[in-house]
Length: 103
Image (tube, rainbow, N blue to C red; front, side):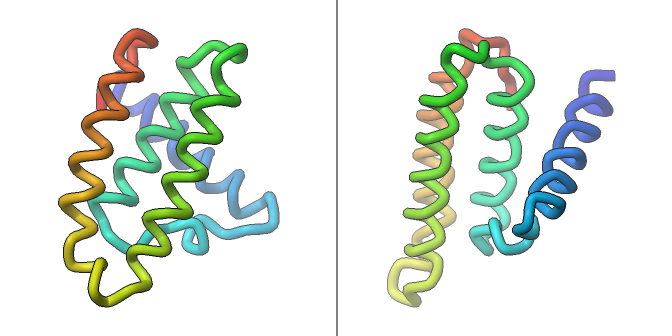
């Protein structure tokens, strides 16, 4: 049941990005590991993190997306990006555990 609800929220988020003028594709990093993490992170922040903390987490993921997209565009760093996303993603996951996020 949790998986279905999380998937539905992720889909709604992607549709919202599309309706908001940008497409979900335009927001992608282009590395599956990175894209999965960013989507899961955003779903957690929008569904479980209290509104008083949401801005901080949203800013953090926006900065991370910008950095990762930049690294993905550089052929020299693109090859290392999956490992970078995995490592940084794990650190950020731990920061969301107190809010009940598990991904």
